[in-house]
Structures are given as structure tokens and as C-alpha cells.
Length: 237
Length: 237
DNA sequence: CCTCAATGGTCTAACACTAGCCCAATCAAC
DNA sequence: GTTGATTGGGCTAGTGTTAGACCATTGAGG
Image 1: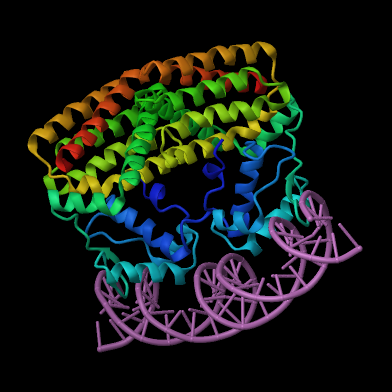
Image 2: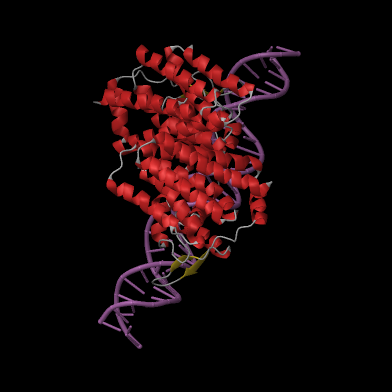
């Protein structure tokens, strides 16, 4: 048992840095879509379990970086201005070199494990009609997505699988895993052939989950993520 | 996309509380076995990314709670005195009521997902002979375990699967998942028939991983964990 | 018996973070 | 216009946390 697995840093950084990361996560994953605003400072500070001062510092940093536009007064707030950058091979290379090979491999492995696990669990869970509807709805939304909103709805679809398991721990972990590859995904040019291929795989994932087949669900997610990884390798070589 | 999944608290508590939790994790999971000592304060503080003052407060708390025995001078240190309590149905009921039904279900679901995911990933990873040996070694150690060290070696075996994937994120997540059910596992009386059954399942898991069959690996882990969950339900009803 | 390296024990000054309070700006409703 | 609710902006006093230095204890080895 490697002690470093357990005796690792208790904190990833100070409260300010962690808050910036968390807000960036919400923005980049599209939890708060472009044009929408974050919850009011007082409310958000409570949700994040930090003081308003620290939250404001984080918001200020994101404002300076161009992710947010903060407006005062009633009906004001911190509005999301970030739109994912145009993808391209150059951007992809930059993201990868910024990450480092080890972190890249770690992130892809991590995502593979937790997303497959979530799909498997959901397929073994008895689902009421409400939950089935939500899952199908997310799939339909994604299939109807314009290129501009594709990534966001793709994220929403994948996260829905984890959230529908009813395990907050699992949902949070999948969100974390997704974030770690989001810069990569955003940098991959989206070709119609890839989108079509992904759509077929998404259908297979939903079908497996709805029919209660954990093995098919696992396999479908594994193939889907392996496809993304292969696409990455293709653009990098 | 549920905002609460992403906009959740950035910190589980203050540095002191988180440090206590982390050390308790190391002790209860047996990363530092009874009789052994923690790394020196200065070294451990660096590993955990906190100040020595905060670390000492946490160690002091664990000393007061009877988990550690701290001795000064050369060859001194913080020695682990904790030994897992004798299991029994009463203890189990207490642990479960302390957790709450939602947390219990969350923890079991989370563990199912991440451990199945880890096994699946490891089964799809080309393993060199060194890694194969480590896995078999952990299994042999577990099969040769005395009752007193069974839980610790069982943990070591399960964590080894995650660690061998080479993904620190995945390893840390599995350690976290394991910790969340460790009090439960420790409270389950160990009957020989259950140990024998578990041993068979462990063999199946290792066989599937070594033969590179992700589906069999996933299924074997799922069955194994489902067995634990069933055992739990049995003792609680 | 002495020495000395390794370890826990303690102190201080600086910085980070929090809770709570009040101010300033905005804009829909009247 | 005026008002009032809602929102961001800013201040202060108190607490949590850190880095670094120095002290105290222990025990193996000379």
C-alpha cells in the first residue's frame, strides 16, 4: 500500500485558488452557460463554504481573465462571457504540453474508470419513468445540438449518467474527471463524421442502461471514451 | 446539469479537521500498521502540504482519542496504537445509524463504481511481469492472512488494483471510497465461509485481470462487492 | 559516561480567511 | 420621479494557518 496514495496533500491550494478552480469548472463545463449569471455572492459563498471576501477575490480574478462580466445593482451579477475557443491542432498541442504526459494519461485513465463505473451502476439500478425520461431527454438535446452548444450538452449527457445513480460522491467525481479532460476536448476539431459516430455510441449507452445491461453499458462507454482517446492520439501524431 | 454537483463546498472543513481525517484514513486502512510510526512531523507536514503546527494539533487530537502514542527523542515518533474493534451486530448498527441511510447508499454505490472501473482499466492495461507479480503477491498475502490482519491485507489487495493502473487520481479515489466503508467492513463479523467465498472471488478478479478480460474483471469485482453489500443487509435486517 | 543526530515541543511574526456590518449602484414598480 | 428590493463593493475585528527559528528529550555509538 503506497503511503503516498493516502498521505497526499490535504489541500490543493489556498481557498482563493480552489475557488477559482471550482468556478472555472462551472464555467468550462457549461453548468452556467454563456450569458447566464452565477448565483448572488452571498448565496454562492454559502454553497461553496467560503467567505464572501474570498469568493469576491476569485470572481475578480475571473473577471480580469475575461471569463466573467460583473454588473452591480438589482438584476446585476457575475455574467459568464466565456465561450470555448475555436479548436485546432495547435491549441491541442499546447494544452497537452501544458498538462504533461503523465497528467494526460492519468486524466484519461481516471475518466475511463469512473464513467464506465457510473454507467455500469446506473444499468443495475431500477429506474423509474422520470429518470428514464431525463436520460432520453439529455440524449435528444445532444442530438439536436448546434455546434456551438455541442460540448456543453455532451457534458450534460455524460454527467447525467452519474447524477442519475443518486450518488453525489460519484457525480462529483465524474464532474471532476470530465473537467480534467475538458480543455482537451474543447481543442479537438469536431468533424461531422466524429459527431455521427459519437451519436451512435451515445444511443448504445442509453439503450444498454435502459435495458439494464451493465456489461453492455460498460462496453459502450469504454468504446466511446476509447474513441476520444484515439482521436487525440491521431491529432497529436 | 445539477449546479450543486459542481458548486459544492470547496473545503470539507478547516485544515485541522481535514488533517485528522487523513491521518485516521491512514490508520484505519492500515497504511501505517499498528506498532509502526508515522513519518517524522517535519516530513509529514510537507507531504500533507500543511504547517507543522496544524499537523501537531491533529496528532495531538488522535493521541487524546487513543489512536496514537507519541514519544520524544531519537527513535521516537507517533506510533499507531489503534487496533480495529471486535466486530458485532451491535457495532454495525451503530455505524450505520451514525452514517445515515443516504450516506451509506452513496458510499456503497461510489465504491462499486470506482473499484469496478479500476479493475476494468487494469485488465485492459498491458502488464509487465513486475506488476503481475505484485498483484499475485498481494493475493497470496491475503490468502495467508491471520484474522487480525485480514482487513488490512484485504484493503491492500483492493488498493493495489487501483495503484497498478498507474493513475494517482484513480488510486486516491479508490482509497477514499474504501475508507468510507471501512468502519462498516470492520464491524462485520468475519465467518470462515465468507472468507472462503471472498477468496474464490479474489482469485477470479486476479485471473480476469491477468488474462486481460475487462468484462470478466468488472463482473468479478461487482459480484464481490455485491456480496459484501448483501452481507450488510443481512446483518441489518 | 559523553556526544550527537533525530525527533517531538514551543514560540513569534506575518499572512490568510472569516463573520458581520454598512455603503453604493441599479432598475422594476408605482 | 420616488421607492424599495436586490445586488455588488468595502471595512474591521477576530480567528486560523504558516514559516522559521530555537529548545528539550531520547538513545545508540564511541
